[in-house]
Length: 162
Image (cartoon, rainbow, N blue to C red; front, side, top):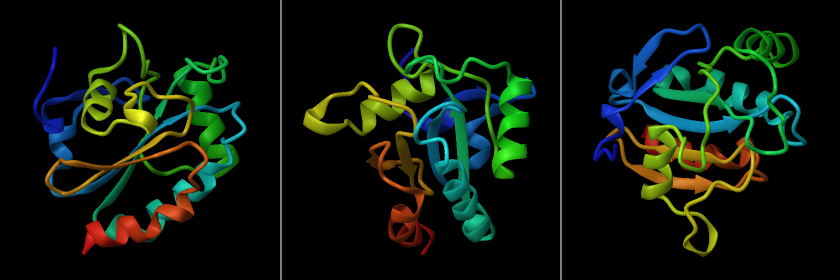
């Protein structure tokens, strides 16, 4: 089902609770597809730093584990939560495992890809730790490649936080 607003989309937390993106209106969102066994996994540390630095100003980092790239997120929700907390002290919201590409792609990622295409105007997400930046009005303003470090996004986030 296609949606015209990111705020109409419902997601599920790692703990199984339903949550509406609409609850995050007026916040800046950094939405990332994550994996525990990826070469980019150490980015959890940078994402956590961004979250801690800017959360009081309205930034929310949202992590969505995905097992579509090299089967690098094979664990259960409990495994993922434990891994993120033990290894990286992750305190930003983490969500249930999703598909980001294909027919079973989560509506959130269908929306993000439609709003902000990748290199050469492709919609498909190429790998783990692709990042989407959403402004306080719910508009997808930027898409960052997996190799874009969280630290490199600071200026873009600062602009949106005002």
